Length: 112
Image (cartoon, rainbow, N blue to C red; front, side, top):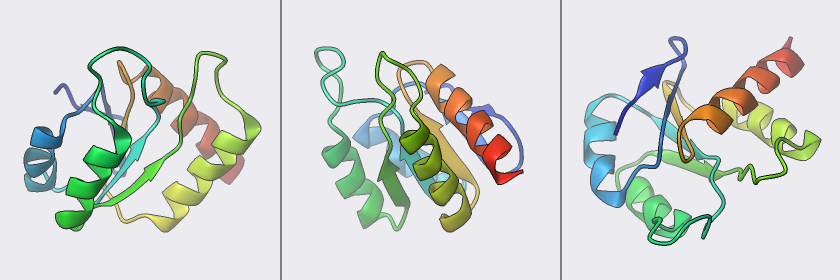
């Protein structure tokens, strides 16, 4: 797990696992947004499995998948809502962290 800080409220990472969640909580993250579609590649953890453990740990979590077609207006709007509604600091993850960075940057433009 390679967490990269974007700013005080948001960081990104590549794919996380259920086992990573205890460390994510210990690192102080209060919420998570998954920007990776399920079944993007073989062996990838399912969002539902990560969400179940995150909820057990008291971490807010939402699935806003960004597929191969890129960002959608609906996805960016959902990300705006997550950023406004969720406790900080927040962790976004996808395969490499690039989509989580891009959708966050777009959400910030809409938030103005």
